[in-house]
Amino acid sequence: MKLTIIRLQKLSDQDRIDLGKIWPDVNLDELEAMLSENHRLYAARFNERLLAAVKLNIRGTQGELTRLEVREVTRRRGVGRYLVEEVIAQNSSISHWWIADDGKGEQQVIAAFMQSCGFRTQADGWIYNKE
Image 1: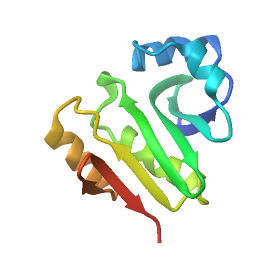
Image 2 (image 1 turned 30 degrees about the vertical axis):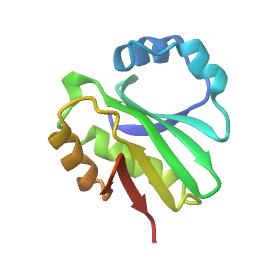
Image 3 (image 1 turned 90 degrees about the horizontal axis):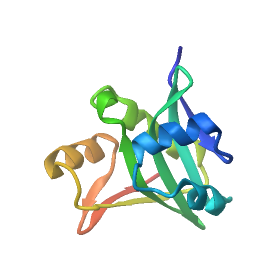
Image 4 (image 1 turned 180 degrees about the horizontal axis):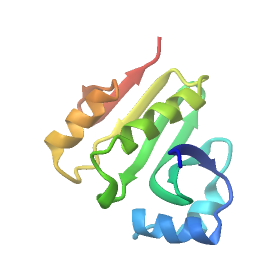
């Protein structure tokens, strides 16, 4: 089965189970209630399971990615990079992208990952401008 990137607008029971593994500290009812054209949720799906997810907040031509997370058992296989690349591709009207440094995880690994996705380091995160 192929890895696909999908925009979630309504969470199935299985989506809730999988997102609970990705984001154990997130209230999924609140997350689902806030989803709209400006507040989107994308996930990487493989074999009917979600392996990674990211939230996208849109303001005009600016997109802010938050809560980018890949399930630990799936890391270092290209899932996160594919998720970021596809979210950017699926939102072609956004030309300025930002992801904040949340201070979690191994900072050098995260910085290398963001740079491999085409983002440049800024004071509190990473920026990507489409040309």
